[in-house]
Image (cartoon, rainbow, N blue to C red; front, side, top):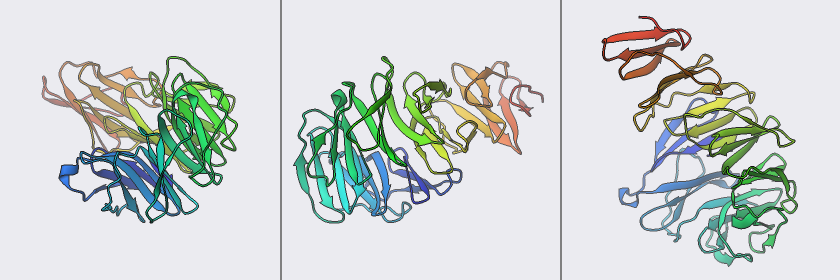
Length: 347
């Protein structure tokens, strides 16, 4: 997921992209690529040189390009093996090859060259900012480069595997295994804000003076500038990515989750009409969210930090919202139940 130029772009399953100018109203686009490719999007990145998305496919790796993220182009050139990530800046595009310890560097829109990285091991993510390209990888390795060709090893102070590096505002942020959260203004010297053995951090965004982290165990954490964390809940969903604009932070995930916050405190859901794996949910903006799980049953939250069991009647029921009222149909008694607040139900 990425934000650039007043647009959020989220990559969905297979060939689907979703685009939004405000993080609330979304439109979907199905990529026009051969069905035989069975592509799986790895990363999407926006820049002033355009939008890029890397993906895996049966026939090897490749990338997509777009001037407008609603109109993606499928190039004829195949870049195999697949590319995990991409960063663009100063008219230079750098594709990250995870398994071969190398990058593919090109002047944007032109043929490029493969460049071996100076430090052994696997690399997982790349970002551009402050006129620098920054790579992160296993064993605490971070490399930086001003041109995408010559790379130097940075001082991270950790040996934990690093999974994602992002650039927000005026600093690089990096997260990884053992609950590691790092930040740097110059890409060379890194400060460790958090280290929590046993946790894995997958993605990060900076918003309203906080760092929001996608984590194992506690799906979404919020860190202040001192590295003190708060569990924001979301215990019943899997969050896959997040991105921030100056006005809004957006998260996406499993069970059709798409939610946003304007102030970093109160969250609102966006009804994407995508469920999955026997689950369903309904959202009334400003009131809360109801989830239906085949095992846990019906649960309700109005702040995404505390969940409550609701609707104790037996039988599988499906929640939905109409005119800001929660409804659900209960099969055993063949009745529609409704609720103004998600907790008290009547028919």
